[in-house]
Length: 331
Ligand SMILES: [Zn+2]
Image (tube, rainbow, N blue to C red; front, side, top):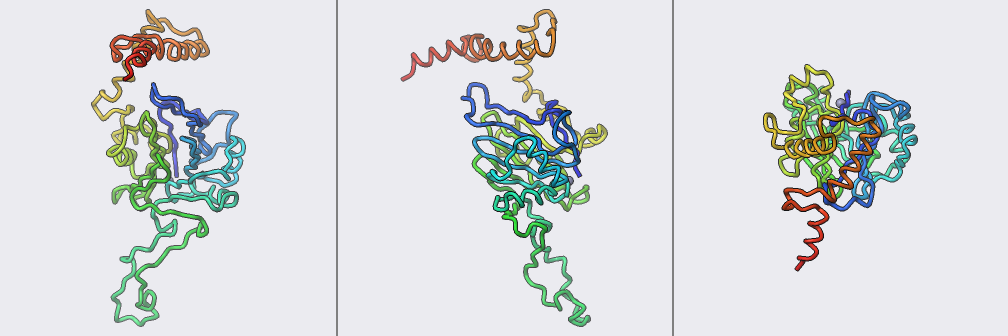
């Protein structure tokens, strides 16, 4: 089961945009996450239901993450949002729960050849752990023992998606250039400690974009598994199972991307926010309307801040001047 939270106050967005770092050339192709399946969303908008699915476009790649709780709703939402499920570079299924997998019935009808990454889990056609079979029962007649006492070294499990092109992931795998999945499992004794789960980390110039299914292993554990080896996480999207405040407290989560008690990770964003407010809204003024705010902030960032404002990091030159100086001084 899944409860979805989108961080950064984006719960009402059916499509999320993430951008390259400032100073990078704009991506020539969409950099976008379209939420296909969720119990949150705008009205009018896609049909709401329990579960999660997201369609990711980045770097010219098209990746589907999970398929929602109901194949018919999944199909209808994909069509309504203009997502062509016959054109996918890869699919990632986070874990075996039905609210993330039911849409596979539709996906495999329209795109049976697509490569699907799933956690190694007997439900996706792994093997039954060898220790499950009790081998030494010599007192019993053969017909009362597993496989008449001759247990095969490997006992593959069946799967509802036997015909699918599944790649089962043990710990981590590269799905496509810049797209990587990591597999995590909750500690023994925690809820769903038998349900391994994949999370998808996308490398962007601004940091990692992390897409998660239910976060049964615990979002802290998932973040730690991707943070150690790559850039900081820029954006986290998906299901967290943390919608009830007491559970947020129990999990020790903090509403910040910083390490607990360490404001350094937020310092640049907060400094930028402070500058914007002082220069755009002097004397605690406020915008006349939401539309006014959109226009003012867009003008401030695109026309003034990124071109003409002098920056201490550039030796108190404007980005425009800095670029001119750089061209003059090129070897
Ligand atoms: Zn789940």
